[in-house]
Length: 221
Image (cartoon, rainbow, N blue to C red; front, side, top):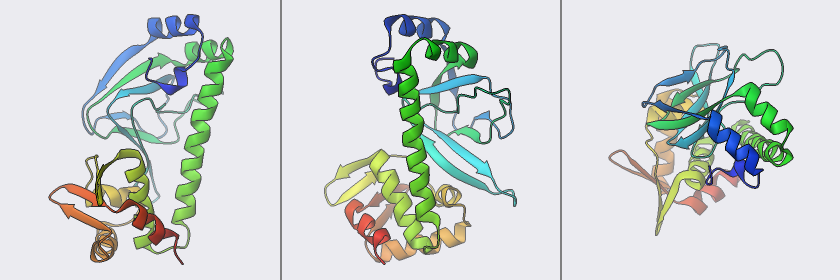
């Protein structure tokens, strides 16, 4: 609990109650937590590992919206009667979540403004991420969309290794295509462009990027 941002500065009574009601939930890699249109009456927070948040388009193709990690709230805290999820959630790798009953969690929020404020800030930051994604997906070439996506992944999961930044996350061409909502072949062509420009290199299953050069590339006209 001490390492989870949304619990920073909350009342001791709130912490005690959250510890009492929290249940540990383990997910295997690729295991579904919930699908679109499922009734979700829990609040999930990631303790360890990562999960993918996705939507299915009209063609039945999956579009990855976010990869969430330690300390992130997984789902919306729904306060109306409609508790139907508008997204799906799948374990990106082995993950441990803390599960809370949503009604009890909301009751704790009602009595602890610091918790409420932290939750609002958490969703505000996620909205900003989504706005950046929308900005980078409108009317720009696929190679620039890919550059923006890899840059963002590098900011969240990158490890500096001198000239290159190692993306410390289990990625595949197919998965990145799902993140950008395009076909694998289209993504492969865009990746080849970035590799030819020495902005990305792939060694086996490992991806490396030049962080600042990628930023300049997708921001250029």
